[in-house]
Image (cartoon, rainbow, N blue to C red; front, side, top):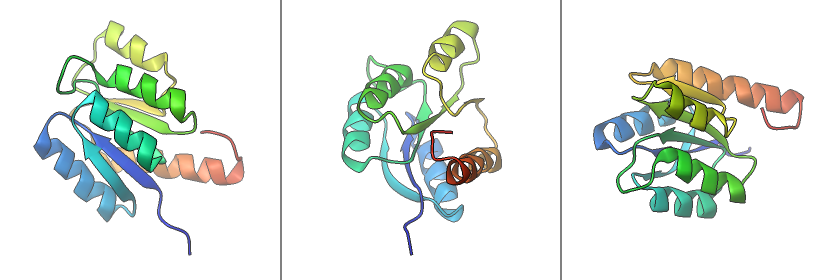
Length: 132
């Protein structure tokens, strides 16, 4: 039996982070770590090599989730990133979309939608062995 897909949860708000962790686990995913800063997220993503990253745009410290995602993707091109953010302005959205994430969702997000996006990606990958 193979292990469930892994998820790294990155958010600057502890309550949101923990709610996402619980929902990911309940949805059948393995949570390989949580982070609230760019450096933590890059270090965990490099070590754990998650299948998915739920990445908030605003993080603790001077760097944002877009910069963290850029660094992570330089090392792991196969990771699938879902940006989850309170920001919906055009410039932030454009910068995030330049990284070709799996999705960009504006808070408050419906976790059922997040799980659906992740499951659809897994299904597509099973049929076609390239990044969804």
